[in-house]
Image 1 (cartoon, protein in one colour):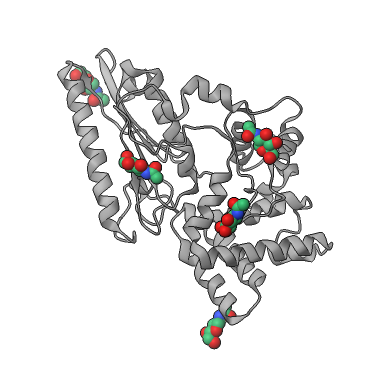
Image 2: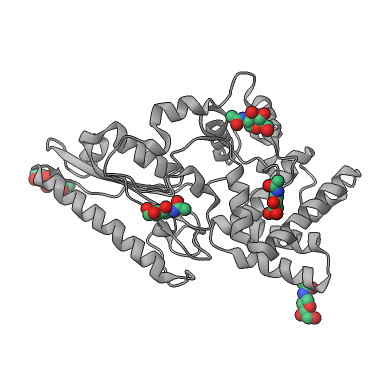
Length: 343
Ligand SMILES: *[C@@H]1O[C@H](CO)[C@@H](O)[C@H](O)[C@H]1NC(C)=O
Ligand SMILES: *[C@@H]1O[C@H](CO)[C@@H](O)[C@H](O)[C@H]1NC(C)=O
Ligand SMILES: *[C@@H]1O[C@H](CO)[C@@H](O)[C@H](O)[C@H]1NC(C)=O
Ligand SMILES: *[C@@H]1O[C@H](CO)[C@@H](O)[C@H](O)[C@H]1NC(C)=O
Ligand SMILES: CC(=O)N[C@H]1CO[C@H](CO)[C@@H](O)[C@@H]1O
């Protein structure tokens, strides 16, 4: 109603095409599911419609996106850091400007996220080139990784080290409250617990189900727990019973395993394949961060792959809009797009 008024469409039988990327991609799909009479269709870019409890595929995808050499280097960093922490050498945290993270799990989560983000947002070389080089040179791998974290993850990507501190997350009025809000979503509904797989994991095995459950309890108190089977029963997961929703995922994006990756009737799904195709590539181009709506595909390692899927998405939008018009509906097709950074 508010948007109809804002765009001067009150009083007409108005439909919308809804857009979103990442969690808002799931919201875009769910909005279409819930309000088919108000919508013509939906783009669910990297739409994470499947709640996953033990989301081991996330880490597994990091290993695959990294490739054997870089994966091995990352695993060695994990072994070395785990070893230092085990023998009580907290000084390793100082290398990462993360002395404030007293809980080893919080610190290890920072390191795991830092590595994931390179693949999630289409900058694999920024991480892998120096690591592979350091491995070849025989120079200190942990230092090379710390350099990446300080320089890129914190410096360029502007990640907040403090936001990994559970004490910080407990604060209900922090300056940047989105971290707490996101964890509440995770802890109460969708989980996506990024636990280390039993075999061949990139991240520390200490990032397990227990770590997440403890965090939820510590930050939000007893009884906040993600019942993912209820969430998926309610929305349908990848079997979402909507229509005219187009899904797109990037081949290197660890989140794609929580999205709908197989086309079904009325729900086409596209995988955009290239070495820096991550989260919401169809919307942002490459790299995906900083977020750049309608961004350039020329920096994608395969611009054709991106352009092809963009064309397919536009074809679906055109078709579904025309079908709305055929039904005599008056169209107010304004893009509502909110891209949330996604951890
Ligand atoms: C809204 O629509 C009415 C009726 O067509 C028109 O008179 C008015 O100028 C429009 N307002 C805006 C802000 O476009
Ligand atoms: C998640 O993993 C934990 C630890 O391996 C296991 O105990 C639990 O049963 C798993 N839960 C689900 C829903 O897979
Ligand atoms: C590795 O060795 C090359 C050649 O000696 C040098 O240019 C490069 O800076 C070294 N890289 C690292 C990470 O030490
Ligand atoms: C564990 O991972 C390694 C490396 O990918 C693989 O060779 C091995 O078969 C895996 N073992 C099991 C039990 O899955
Ligand atoms: C890995 C994966 O899920 N690939 C799918 C990507 O999308 C195409 C087109 O819908 C499917 O055919 C693939 O199975």
